[in-house]
Structure formats: structure tokens, C-alpha cells
Amino acid sequence: MKVYFIGAGPGDVELMTIKGHRQLHACSYVMHAGSLINPEILSALPESTQIHDTSKLNLEEQVAIYKEAQGVDQDVARLQSGDLSIYGAIAEQMRALDEIGIEYEVTPGVSSVAASAATLKSELTLPEISQTVIFSRISGRTKVPPDEELEKLASHKCTLCLFLSIHKIKDVAKKLSIHYPIETPVVVVYKGSWKDEKIIRGNLKTIADKVEAEGIRLTALIL
Image (tube, rainbow, N blue to C red; front, side, top):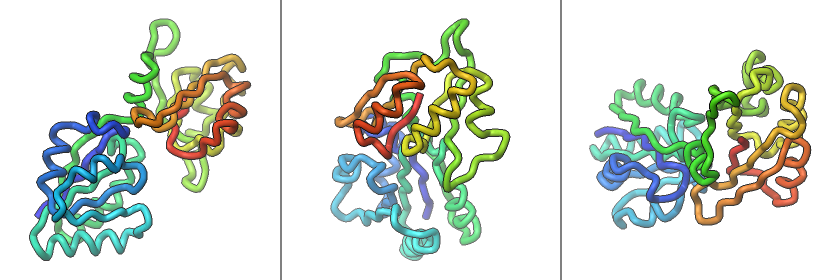
């Protein structure tokens, strides 16, 4: 019995890797990250597959599913959105599996950053403009270390890709304006690569009002 942590990609079913797709369809149990996973990926699974939405389950409840699968010697696919190495929240899962002696493997996926850059037809690094990209988030319920607060990251004036921050877009713009010129371009990509994706363009002065007018509070990347 083995657990496969699989990056399901940013949303478009064709942006899931061939390896991830093969592993997913070989597993009898599938655990997935709720609405972050395109339902088309799940609907293509065999009817016999036991599918569990983990978005409302605590760690103990999820471990119980792993133990159940272990008891019947069936493999488990653990689907996470995007790529697992960026805010994948899999570390606690792997520690739990280590404790109960279950083997696991990690299969990378296409990040929402790559999907957003592709849909924008843009490079994140350009000569004489920016040769560095920072992936981060604004501090919230999950605190960021003091040296990684947005005000400090903004001092580098490089390309920023901000996850899990769209609900605080006004605070983001305010903090970044300390170092970036107010006319600095900002793009918000909502559900990049999904059929209902939206692209909102503005600058540090205008982006918050534009995002709020669209009512976007989740599932968006700030570039």
C-alpha cells in the first residue's frame, strides 16, 4: 500500500501531468482538496473509487482514511491543487504517514504561477527589469516570519507572486506602495486556466477597487 501525493495542476484538466493522471487512476482511494480541484478530474474516475473531500476534515479524520486503505492494502491518491511544493500543506500529512509506517511518493504539478504567466502571455523575468521572482503571501491567520513581511520583500522591487492574499488586496497594495511606484502594474488572475478564469489589470492605486468590484475573495493570484 502506498500514498501518492499528486499536484493536480492549476485547474485545466489537460495541465495535470501524465504521471499524475496515471497514478490517480491506479488508486482505489482518492483524497482531494475540495473546490480547488476541477470536478472534471474526479468525474473521470471509475465508479468503484472511494472519493473523499478533505477540505472539511481534520488531520485525525484524514489519517483514519489512510489507515482504512492500509487495512485493505489499497493505494491512495492525495490530490492537491497546483504544485505541492508551494503552499501544498502536505508536511503534516507526511509526518503522520511516517508515524504509522505508510510509504508515500510526491508527484509535482503545474503551479498556478506558471498557468497565470501563460494566460497573460508574459515572462516573470525580463532583462534590466527583474531577474528575481518572489513567491509569498500577506500575513494573516498563518503568520509569516518578521523578515518576510511584504514591506521588506517589496524593498527588492522584483517580480512578486502573492498567494492566499486576495482577501486583503487593499493591505497588499498599501504595503507594496512603500517601495514600488504607485503606477507599478498589478495583475490579478482568478482561477487561472479554469473555464471561468478572470484577468484584472491595474496598478497599485487602482487594483484593490477593481478586485472588490468583481467580488473576488478567493482562488486568485496577485502578480
